[in-house]
Image 1: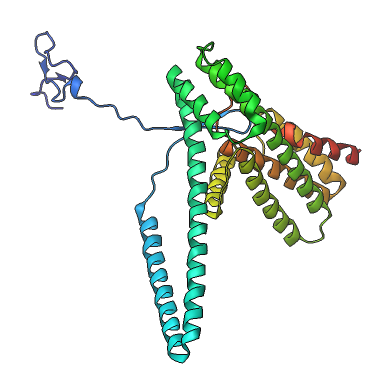
Image 2: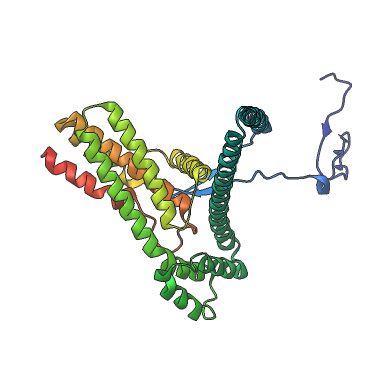
Length: 342
């Protein structure tokens, strides 16, 4: 700094600082013009009961544009090929052309039915997601009206299940007596979802034991991989059906992607206080037999995937009910490995 320049001070307030020999330069931006931009974060309930903040991903539109354009080109090519084939059949023999037209009509009718089923499955999945998000918003803002709307929507969602009729009746009877948001949503969770949670836990435990037994006894790795994938697909569909989802092919892919993302976020195989139990159980099993260790590992991974699928398919977050942990669905698997090792 040259000796001819005087020191300058900057402050948000445009009023100059008093004092001799000091030149103040106010900032051009006023405080009321300052703007704070908040990046939204999504809160994901982990399988071990830990809330994990996840920054939203920014998706590029080019991938969707490419898939749409390529799909349109393929559809045009198939349509032109079918039209030429039918025209050739009419030229060769008219009755063959009519048969081809009838078959094309049946195929179009079946395609419409498949599309309708896919759209219905996607709409039902999005309804479950909106219910869960509305419940999270009501709990976060302490919105009693929003919580009441969530409970009513959940009761309407399960209106076709006769087994949940007593729970819906108890919710309706206690509707005017509950003023707390947590208590209202917790009552709906207990009356409508507690039994479904038990069914989902039993399905996860059964699938984990089957995967562990099959992969421990199968002679080839390709059989292990095929059965693990098959069990994961069947388990995801089973959990979705338990909570009221009816996913088609596209809906299943959407659920599988969400479950895998949830499993990745929550830490893969082991998170929380059950880490030592998993590591010790697997280590003991691996010392006895490498195949037994592989079976235990595959069973644990299946159980972890099932817990992630449960959190994705459940229409409400865990409020009053305890979220299932790995020991709840794979504890028998770990206990079965220890006596064999001893």
